Length: 273
Length: 322
Ligand SMILES: Cc1cc2nc3c(=O)[nH]c(=O)nc-3n(C[C@H](O)[C@H](O)[C@H](O)COP(=O)(O)OP(=O)(O)OC[C@H]3O[C@@H](n4cnc5c(N)ncnc54)[C@H](O)[C@@H]3O)c2cc1C
Image 1 (cartoon, each protein chain N blue to C red):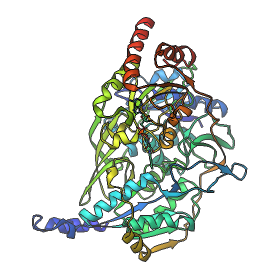
Image 2 (image 1 turned 30 degrees about the horizontal axis):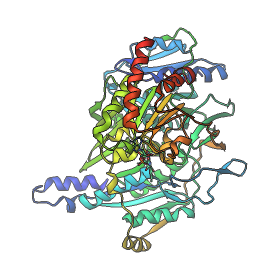
Image 3 (image 1 turned 60 degrees about the horizontal axis):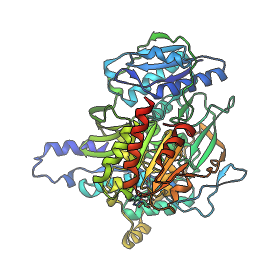
Image 4 (image 1 turned 180 degrees about the vertical axis):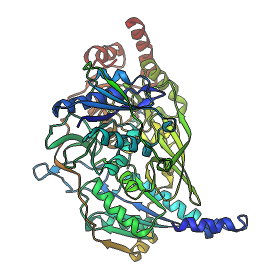
């Protein structure tokens, strides 16, 4: 909660003369999920009980990448330390190194297979407790298992405030203004730190996403990557088997000069209009 | 021991998705030889949910629950579950439901499975089918915890009528002021127009439409069909359309009855997000566009010629059928 202390110190000075950057700094944790690249072919193996990682390229979950980019913005504009954390085995390290190359200061890997969302949230909650973070940025959902529960569960376990589907976040002192997406529009919310958000597209503009440069990659090698052992936690769900959607039946083509036929098909065959 | 379902409302009226989650809850209750109870917050017409097999409604009326607050609503549902001794809780896939579900899961130390697309495969052990990898696969998932929370995918189970009388009961949860956590200061929402989340038909435009000035025909087509409008990712990245319209793997998922893609190539990330729609129509000038492999009906042609003609034909069709 040190940012709140800093903020009070800041209030007691003459704010016009004080450089914001020097007085306030936040401690931010970005939770990173290591997921198959969006172009991956999805297959299952071991009697359809496991995702087949063969030939699959892993990346930072896109929703988390928006969050990481927003964290870098806070670091540059308002002063912040940015840590990243992931729950996963040693094979996730290239993805974490990429986050360091983009500019995160330190990384934490909880050395455990992510069993389910609740389990991952418990692991991250332990990391957050240890690190006393003011702001935790996770993704609204990861694009592999689409669970969408990690940020909300960990916020609740730690009794931190929580904004999901977050598309804009501003912070001043310990006050936060966030915009979340709602069905058919958006809602502006005010809240206070410590805060957890479930971020998504919109949090930063697409053009702000950073591709690590050579210097970043070199520097990332020197940065600390702490490996910690998991805390005791149970999973509450288990994926027993997987399967793939049935292949699509063939398409019916309609001539551009015969749109009555399209309407006829949609009305009488598909019965959707 | 009844199955609990949260039926959402807006401006005092049940939302469209309430019927589907209620139907699902009734199905689970049947499988478990019990009854289904709904929780309705600030809802005037909650009794009508009896049409979908719900035999009891807990009506919560409270000024401080306007507008939606995820944490407070999660506490309401927790208290309702405690009171009813409910072990299974059914939610929708709305943005609000997906916001409160993990909070409720943590409060109850339960298991949560979102994106469920069918009735439970069994209730002991409790197994459900859900989508994973953005609709590129399905998982058959067991809930091992005592409390089970299910998020039903939009438009996957359907509305199944089972006329019952829903006995109304007032329920006053105790909500401490400091549990709210966030304060709503502004809601910016389209009114009177279908949204991507609940529309039966979605009309979507891609980069093939060349620029934002050409969206008039997309909006007109949507209006004729009573549809919501959507777009591909580059269209929202370019600022031609608002971010809220971006659909696909990294945007909103679409699971409507009819999805019409105009000037959209059908990239894997786009298809992943829209493939749960029941019927897909593609209009594209390039016969090689990948979307033709994923659609049910296709028209090869210039959108600027096809769409205005289609609008005219649909207007004729609508005027004849009414
Ligand atoms: C990590 C990642 C995530 C992504 N997530 C998403 C996502 O969630 N959603 C998404 O949509 N994309 C996503 N993408 C982008 C995706 O790969 C494609 O680039 C994008 O979907 C293409 O959009 P488009 O079809 O509108 O444009 P294009 O691919 O440029 O296609 C335009 C189409 O319009 C047709 N056309 C041109 N002129 C006409 C005309 N006059 N009449 C009719 N047709 C015409 C062309 O034949 C072409 O097929 C993602 C990409 C990445 C890397």
